[in-house]
Length: 137
Image 1 (spheres, rainbow, N blue to C red):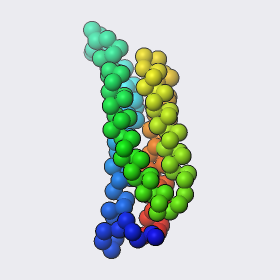
Image 2: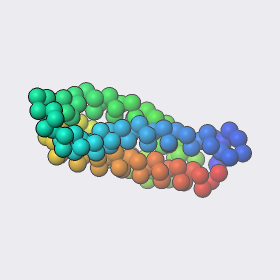
Image 3: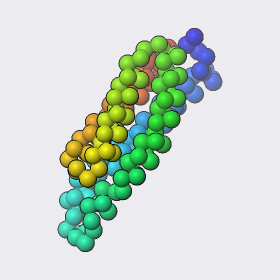
């Protein structure tokens, strides 16, 4: 039933969770993408440890755990709406990569590759979910 998640004639209520979930998932992505800038400014922060520059390990888990419930909600509603599991599968892979990145904390390049790759997959999953839902509105 395509219209069951709509609040008004424009159907925007059903699309908000995807935007929110993508934004929260992108926090990890931004964190990793801004790290090279921090490394470039490293001489200015000569006395700081590596942990101070990349953030504590708990930060990765906190961002991941904040984004996860919103993603599950948005992707579940999308699956109910459009019936296609591909966005949820891609997001699951993205979250797995981001968790692996958090586990790789301290292995700078591996951590960044896993987290950025996972964040991009999650962003794609929510974009695709949004497009599939919008096509039915």
